[in-house]
Image 1: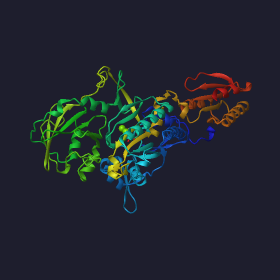
Image 2: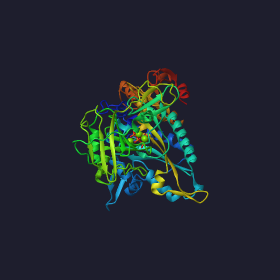
Image 3: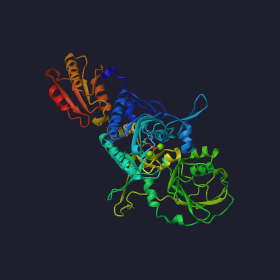
Image 4: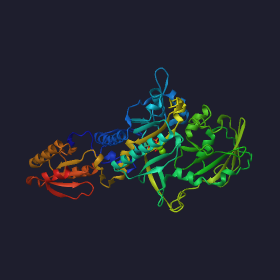
Length: 563
Ligand code: ATP
Ligand code: MG
Ligand code: MG
Ligand code: MG
């Protein structure tokens, strides 16, 4: 590629809202351009990196026996209603109507589509297991698109889905995908950690791990033991630390006092939204004293409230706005993913609270909801017990916990039969009995990975691409394009590299040497070959971006070093 014809230029200034290094550098070096909030164009340089990432992901998926396909982004809302996620997914799901007024959604993920597909393709255990995957654009109307490609509203994901006839089969598919993820992370040059994760909104019955790229700007916190290897997403670690908590066994007395009525979950959500900025936990008890649910929210995600049904060990993520939406419809959130029914009908819930509520962090309070046929109370127990740096590991009880910031770049998930049951994907087992297919899902944010890599591989002058995914491997820079000797040698080197199949960028622009060098460091191609004052002797200056150590080499020596 001749840089003089490249359809992007480096920028002197970047918008001030580009806070994260990866966002700034990718804009500045001309890899991406923003179209709207959380919506980006991959310029030719960015597209090349993305393709290399896709290729690594594709190779590892293929090696693991997964089959590539491509499903539509445009999905009938009907499928989402069948799975129960139409209401639960909330405003993150981009909804639209066609000209006949039929409802659609732009796929944020593909469990519904793929399960329906498999339902129609596979009817016997003989055809299982199957793993399919795609690399495709996803849409999520994120409340806070941030850090460029890191949290986009339109982004590239690799999503894979496994279908098994047995739980052991699922374990094995899960392991296969997990191992493939390890190879992908390593090949892409990411410093990462695989951690136990929280089940979240996807729901499901099995285990789940997240692959976290370590970075200070990461929105997730990882708690890792320095001794036994235990590593978990903070939310998961906290739920673990919580397990022996005695509070759940006690039944709080219910006081009814003169407080505003909380009639809807929307009001309840508002209440949580204006509450203490600390993590709070609220336990919900049935009138008979049985714990029903735990409501948790933290100041890190104002939009997310976690409702956790400890009794059923099921979890549901609710955004406040989702609750709002749901209030207008059927029983809120509580209509959640199939299988989860926190027994509250929100429209009909009435609550009275004690005086301590309005912003008072210290006071305990109790809520009593009067639900048709059912009473339950809510007790606030104060600050959520934080998992802290240096705390004793709950797993081995020997080591201490260390905390890291991480970017979730991948997620593997045992779904079980949640979607196959909801959407009727069944197969006949060896005895001829109909069973729901047992599923797993496995996502990698390919575009997010690109930004995570830059976040980990840069210095004050620019990006340092790991060679496996660099847009080009070699940057040939004639110091002066007007100098015939230099230009001839540069052209010769360029031609030779291309002949050998090396990705090479030739800086044939009529620019000052300083400008070219600065741009080269910004763009971050791993090997730089400068054709300058030694050109008359047939020599060039060879340097690698990572250490900038310069060597004067003959063209042949330079070529053999590159090959
Ligand atoms: P997050 O917790 O960051 O919102 P998620 O848990 O909602 O991510 P998943 O549903 O697990 O995401 O999707 C699989 C993968 O897709 C994630 O591990 C992540 O790498 C990527 N991903 C999710 N949301 C985005 C986004 N808004 N922009 C870019 N990549 C994303
Ligand atoms: Mg998300
Ligand atoms: Mg997540
Ligand atoms: Mg996830």
